[in-house]
Image 1 (spheres, one colour):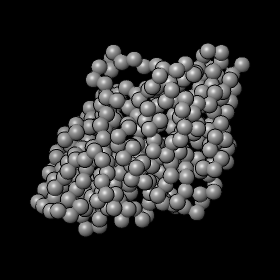
Image 2 (cartoon, one colour):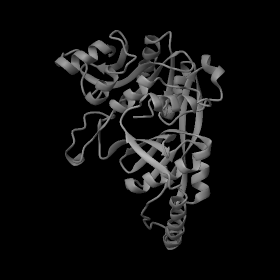
Image 3 (tube, helix red, strand yellow):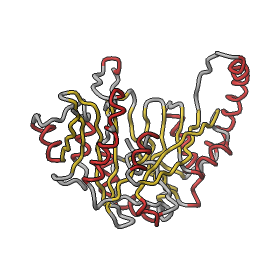
Image 4 (cartoon, rainbow, N blue to C red):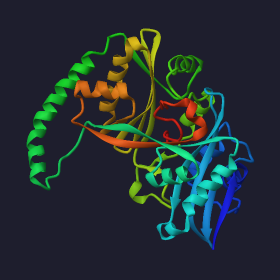
Length: 351
């Protein structure tokens, strides 16, 4: 018989700090992610953070959530993060029961889901959520072509010409950066930075508090492990990753702040997680993103920002641009925020 267990922030802290045997384990949530959730500035001891499903002593499913007080609009939301069900229990409605318990734990909150799987989106819809789909683009900067068909052969033959065009395009983009542009890498969001974010976020549906943004930077859900072949992996959402870094960049024209960018490197990909810029220096900020991408060694750049995507396509700096769907779910009560305009780190997409 499947039993469901709700674990509060107090339970999570007791497991992390004192190794209390209260049903939590790394088969349910990684210690890195659990530590991040426990230190979320909006979390209280009584808040449910994890729900698990067990068949006897066997973990057959789990999910997690964290609450958040938005700066704009003035409201509380809760974001689901991670959902896994043992495939052998797919007919037992485990996923539905896990998510339902999350929703029931936050009756006064708007429960959202960002970058959710199609299966999780269906569960949210059954619980009354609305599904939105966004076009996210993956710009391929580096690749190797394997020959499996005649089409691959043709692509391989054309690749030198594409790379030549790319080199010329990149050279032009880098040359377009004004000589007075400076970049400062930071670890936290200070008052000046947050004021800039506030002033350039009027079109965004959500504005996070400064405390939440700093929490995202200080408490990542994963940790870089250079020896992944020897890594211990105990569950589907492991905290171990080959390459992990957050590059939080302040971009200045002389002494004036003109752009704020968060670029997240995850294995061979870089993701644009935060992008704020003034109109006059927009293309210079975009060019800095390209330059950072080149220095990182990443192969692909993911972006859901239409203006940035249009710039990258027009400049032809990538060998190819692929489309990738991003699913966002929200309760019908939030229809007043339509159209939803997202930042790349909204919800739990900073993970």
